[in-house]
Image 1 (cartoon, rainbow, N blue to C red):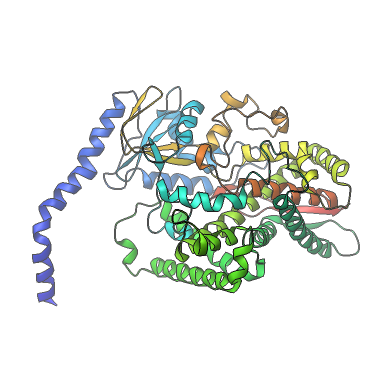
Image 2 (image 1 turned 135 degrees about the vertical axis):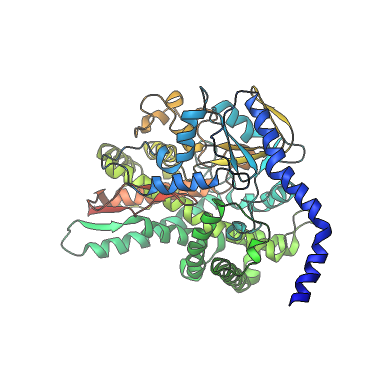
Length: 529
């Protein structure tokens, strides 16, 4: 043993001067240089930066403190201090007139930008070859949830996957502005009936819970809606059912909590190979998810290649795609991982917040129910044409996305020295765009920015650079069309059958995990109508 240690010491000793120089450059000299670069431009930074960890420990403490107490029972929607406490506190102290400030995540500088024009400029950059701003990649621990799927890819690989995946969720299903294409459109007709069937199955179970006496009953809707959206993404994207993918969803729930921890911590190269309890758990979850997906893909076999859903397009690319489009089996598994998670999580939480907001605002619940009754009737399943005619419901969904967007922030990295407004941004700087702060900005939305007011979307216009719940520009979420249709169908069918209020047991505590969700669930009281 002693001889082995001696050999290792002898092998690494020549590298010691290089490692010492590299550490000095990475953790001391370069951060000091960049700090001075931004300070000379009037950009301030919180004190107490750790040379290795940066401000990551402060951010974790702020989040833990914010989540330790729920919001007041008055149900106000001023949630920025709770879900993005570091931005809320630091922008007020160090952000100046425009809210821009610098902080550090490990040795990497992050420039927080909350001006709509600057956010728009960053997001409109394509992220392709020669672009100024690129996606910030996942570290090896957080990458396990999405693999090498669209969410984490960049450059030509992202473009390749987007070309293959895009048609499964293309705008020929839904035209710009939420107006559906003709009733003869195969894709439109395949979506809505499938979603309605899944919603009908969920609501039938709710009616059973009600019993025969017609009494009011309580449901924790967030969990129910996660099962519903899992069923939808299984059917419309993979041609399967919730039961077939149930184990995958359960494993991804466990994985999500570990990934959330990894995203808030500095990754030490090589750490994932140390057999800690969490690392062993990460490896077990990743292996089981990949094997489950591989089994599902093989079970669908050749039948998938002729379908127009996501799995069919991926399988066609694998077997008969051109060289530029061909994807290997491991890449297909990675895309399935991404859409199994994102297709369930984002939509379920959006629908949860929409129901809670309507439960709190009975006047808008009544208006939405009247519209659904006039357009869809009291019992009939909504059709593609019906959903396109629901203007009030669309306004409510947009206002929900504004107040409770699925993602709290987006990040991009400057790939080269670039001008952003009046700022000279140094290469390697990460741009932090606080979606939640832009969505709640009184300068953009007025003094009632923290109030539920769907009328602000009545004209169909959205402030440029200040409303992007699914991202913006070329990297806009490819699944947003499915999510919006899904929410409108489910919301319409719930309104047809039930009236609902917030249960006394509900605690208002929006929380950021990977998406924004209710920390203690969403308990609501329903009554059959």
